[in-house]
Each structure stands twice: as C-alpha cells, then as structure tokens.
Length: 105
Image (tube, rainbow, N blue to C red; front, side, top):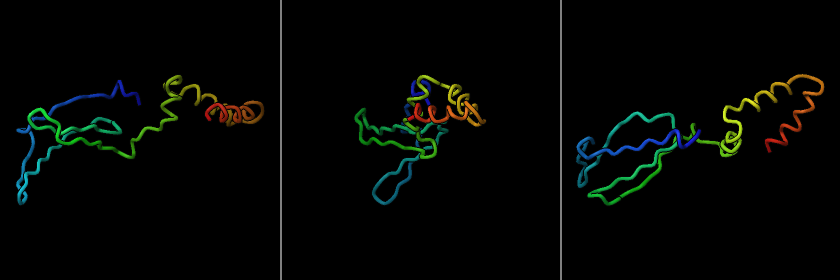
C-alpha cells in the first residue's frame, strides 16, 4: 500500500451525526464507507479545538513493513514472483532459491 494514494480527508459536522442521550451524556454516532485501508486517523473537535484523537485499525489489512520496503523498488512484486516461480523447478533455478531468500532477508 502506498500512503500517498490512499489519503482521503473529510470533515463531518455535528448535524450529520446521530445523537442519543444516555443518562448525563450525549453519544454521537455516524457510519460511513471506508476505503480499502488499514487505519483511520480520527480527531474529534469542538469549536475548532481538538477534544479527542484516536486511530482505528483493521488488523486484517495491516501493512507488513518489510513488504512495504520491498515494494518501493518492485511495486507489483513481479521480479520476486518471477524469481520464486523459476526456483520451483529443479536444477540451477532451484539453487537460486537460496540467494532469493537471502536477498529478501
């Protein structure tokens, strides 16, 4: 995943939130469709002043930092797939698997 491609910013005003009263507090709730993303960075503000900040994450979409680094120079993993595919056979290509693993590490 490339953060520069996934960033989307939005502001939700209070009139777009469903408010319910629970004892001595008001609880706000809203729903929205999140794009294919691993985390949401949320800030709640009142009168232009931040009151709360939280990160909401989807553990099934968490980014693997090693893969992110590798994808910097092989974006679609085409080189890696080609090398690993060739290493599945026998002979010289199979011996290259060891160097591919060392390269990844």
